[in-house]
Image (cartoon, rainbow, N blue to C red):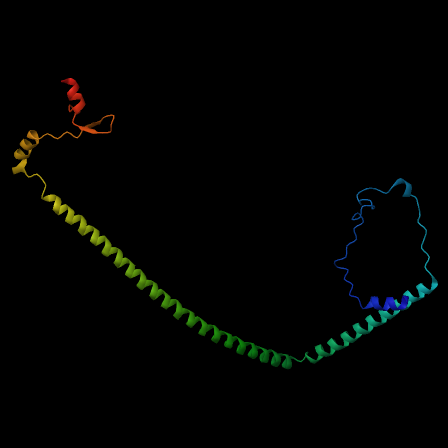
Length: 212
């Protein structure tokens, strides 16, 4: 059973890069910044004695692991050494570089052609949108100018109508005499019933009767 569990443990990926031991994580443990307790300062813990079978099994697993790792390292070393030796030829490296450069250039040309077509379509679309925007803007400006012109014409028409009632120097004496003969008093008072009584010296009918 122990051998089976040990073999299964070999197939589990163990990553020690993210493994961090924290002894103060659990409450029963003492924080690491505290010194050693006086009761344990000179205490030598008893060495754990494992069974002989377990020691042999651990040694066997370690030997198997070491042999497997040595085999893998030797295989990879021989493989990549052969590849490096095959590529050590300058002419072959130059030829491979030129072939790779030609392939990359072909791919780059295809990408550039595709981007050029997309750019032309985008520019044509943006140009059409700008033309439509300019037309709409021009129509809006013409409409605003037409409204402003109509408002200006309305103001001019009202001013022309007001010119007819202006007082000329020839009519000045006549208008003054008419204003003196027909005074207009815009003052008014309001009685308790809410009636308006125009004029400064005008009295209501009740006041006139009371005065009589």
